[in-house]
Amino acid sequence: MAYTITRTLDGITLEEADKRTRAALSGKGFGVLTEIDVQATMKKKLDADMAGYRILGACNPDMAFEAIKMEPRVGAMLPCNVILREVHGGIEISAIDPVASMQAIENPELHAVAGQVRDMLEEALEAI
Image 1 (cartoon, one colour):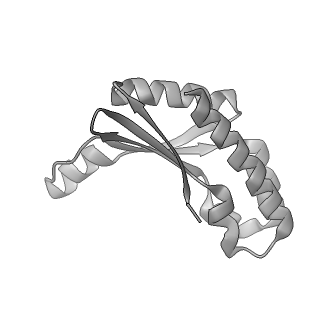
Image 2 (cartoon, helix red, strand yellow):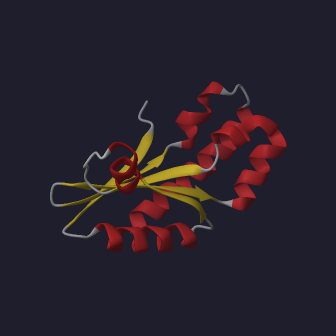
């Protein structure tokens, strides 16, 4: 089973992809709670050079609340991470597939919520 939903945008900068990704996520009810500039962190901590790489911690509060009511420890698996990384000629955007990540939890109701979140993330990535 694939564990991400992925889309590549050709001929676009990381900054533009970030802006468009945040707008598309917002359009589906997600907010970005956290942001990690992996490229800058690796340079600072390891003096290592790498291509642009960001992790956005996206959360849809309604869906997160439903999941937490069903499984209080599911917060260890939240928020839904979305990565933006520079690849040859453009930016690859990948979101975690919540259905894949929730397979470790035996709760059919939670799996149904994960399916709804996956659909929302797929629609957001398509809208970028």
